Amino acid sequence: MSRQIALLRGINVGGHNSFPKAKQLALAESLGLRNVSVLLQTGNVVFADPGTPPEETARMIHDRIAADLGLTVPVVVRTRDELAAVVAANPFPQATAEPKSLHVTFLSAVPADTSRLDALDAAAFAPDRFRLAGRELYLWCPNGIGRSKLADAVGRAPLGVTATARNWNTVTKLLALADA
Image (cartoon, rainbow, N blue to C red):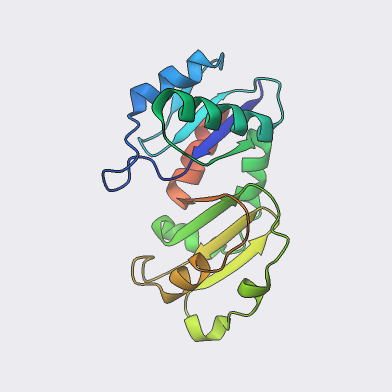
């Protein structure tokens, strides 16, 4: 059975956009999604592929959250195979030894303008590194993301697309859940 993974941005963070795990599950099931699992409480929903393109699934979930909860929650959806490709394409395999140091930002589309990212002087942010690969932005911060000047600089580079980040632990757990 094919699966899709919905990544909701900015819920249950710092007391904002409250959307408990049980409500995430109930909302997904109310949309007709089947075999739904929710990982953590931060907006990671895995379900049987509903037969719609991921972009349409994302729009459907976004619209229902807005209608039912009055929240504007950006949603990015990947298929199980797309998520497996993200894991396989990790440009920083050495980072998997400390998975909290590696983050993937999932983008709703390939950014049309990457000039602000391209202008970053990577050497100035060492040992932190990043790589944009299609609709994913990998960010490796060996000393932690909280103190990373690169993470801040990358976050300020407008890409003109919806984006939501997950650490490597969450990415690999989502893939395992999609494979279960």
